[in-house]
Length: 611
Image (cartoon, rainbow, N blue to C red; front, side):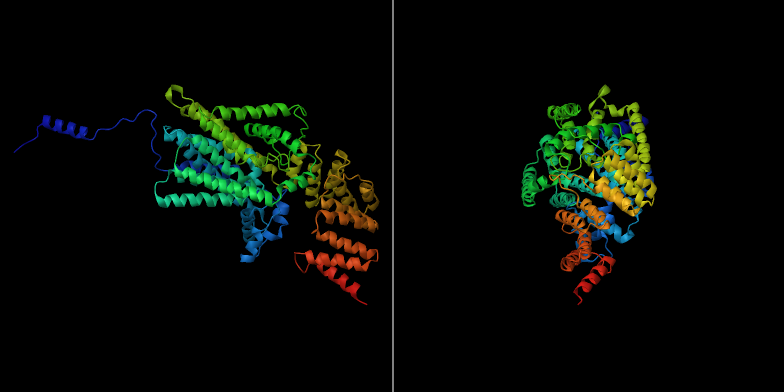
């Protein structure tokens, strides 16, 4: 019988140990990410809720009124096909059926209580933050395949944190109507993630699933807000910089994107965008060339706000001085040069650091729709919500490209502590900024402190005081608006109506008498209507009718103008024309048939038709 002695046992153990040799991993070699780091997502969720805890108590603001509060199309009482179709077809702020559908569902579940609306917005911001984290992991892994998983996760987490906690994002999150921006970002990110997964997929089922997911998400992004239409350009930029050849997949994608661009061009022409541009610019106090000259200064302001997002530098409405040439104002040329330098870095880094180039181009492409030729307001902070992802990625790229002692700088503890400190400060500043969003009065008072020479700000503050049933404060604000710009029609119109409410008819008439109206500019129909109300109250019915007609020229569906014009003709004894006006009013009315105006119009028509 064979027995093992101590020497044999040692040899057997040594043989067993050597039978499964361990391969030493090369330094810097990446581990495959088998499990998604859920703890990072949980930390992001908790921190966002802390940062936006006081946003749940914010009220309705600004464009919430026409898009939600006064939008009958989304105020549904049931979920029938007709009501859903009505919500999808609402076009108050543009063709954005997906966004209006979510508002309709919110209204069906909670009426006009703002808290549930804020809850949905904050939830969407959390989802977007998770998608940003996920997307950055995927893209960074492609450009830097040897990056350790731990460093990859840290980089993605810090970028997502600085983006999500930045106080500048409060306008997109806390302003309820900007759910449109949140949804466009969500579906754009989801489309890009599905696209990246599609390129990596190896089975036929995954091919079809991820491709369908990418296409569907992109269409949903298009249906959320128009700024998503530029997102295919980001995909093209990625394909150009990625250097990852994928044969037929890339060819199919290029063909698909070409079809989208062609379809978009056809829609651009069919919707008569060039003609509409000309019409819309006529109602602005700047031309297309002036807007293009001003936008470099606006984008430079965005960059500075992202870097230093102090609440004192943030506002709902920024009063931007128009650039009339590259030298006027003096900051125009430096801003153009600054943006040229940023774009130059993106171009020159294409071969050396394509990762940086991609995120720089992401930032500029994301701003193409709202910072280009379209006659929109000059500046709004929510416009950088999606583009700023690229900004923070490019800004933090040195964390993984600088290698002290052959390890990325993100491995240095001091760097991590500094980034955590910046994130904590951002959370505090976001919480502080959300205090300003508590009410319309607090929001516009904050804006008035930052832009005391803005007529629009004072008018909105006065309207907020009126809604808050504080006429004394409203009066002082409306007077301030007229003093800031005595020729401003809207300021005079608001103060005139206020004087009517005080039974000071003579003062109201004096505010609008002899007002010079620029015939080359389109005047808001509501201003003409208000002028008509003042003249009618003073008994000058023909002047009132003239202004009501001007209002209807701008907006033929202005029901109140039809009704008031019918009353004015009745006072003049022209019963035939009065009846026609009331019939037009009834024909165009889309609200409740028991409305007092409907009842009164029918009564007057019957009275005039009686012998």
